[in-house]
Amino acid sequence: MEPSDFLTRLWAESAHLAAFAADRDLGAPVPTCPGMNVGEVVRHLGSVHRAVIDWVRAQRRPEDWDRRPDDGDVIRWFRAGAAELHDELGRRPPDEPCDTWSPEDRTVGFWWRRMAHETTVHRVDVEAAYGPIGPVDAEFAADGADEVLSLYLVQRFGRGGRGRPAAARTVGVAAGSRVWRVTFDAASAEVTAELPDDADAVVIGDPAAVYLWLWGRRGDDAVRVCGDRAAAADLRAALAAATG
Image (cartoon, rainbow, N blue to C red; front, top):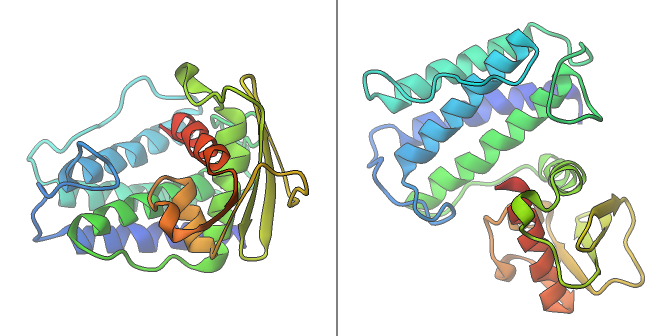
């Protein structure tokens, strides 16, 4: 994908989420985020957008930021923050040095990609509260599968002591033409772009289904799990800990 595609996606997904939730019941429960309703998911995402704005401007992780609308209009507040984030990121080239939480990518482009996927996943959450979810572009979804595996799982493995398997696991993941070998144990995780011959399990599906399965937004019925289903479940548990 071209870097500009992420910025375009960020804007489109933000606009769609706001338009979709406007004039609906914001108290509707979100099945993909147990214990949260639509208003809380929208407020969470708006808070994340504002945290990144502050992070980029100050070039360090913010200690505090705007987390809720003063007037209670969460949709208006969300739209304003999404527009400000898009403008703030868009005025900077993707290769411009920028502080991030990834030691391997200290550029503005990190935030272009991260916010595009953050917003898309939560758009899916909001749609799921009211009915069927809309499509996710295959190329973008495959990139998102790569991001959650190569970035979150590897760099945030075992957060809070959670998601560590009792035994070493090797799981293959195939999302369309993109493939990954995921090896993880109680100490760390490693991801490479190959499909293993010695996998305990292989998770296969179209890119959108695999992307959302990895993020815990779709169940096993959305993908095909070959081999040891417990190993695939261990991967999902490790991802839940890394992304939660």
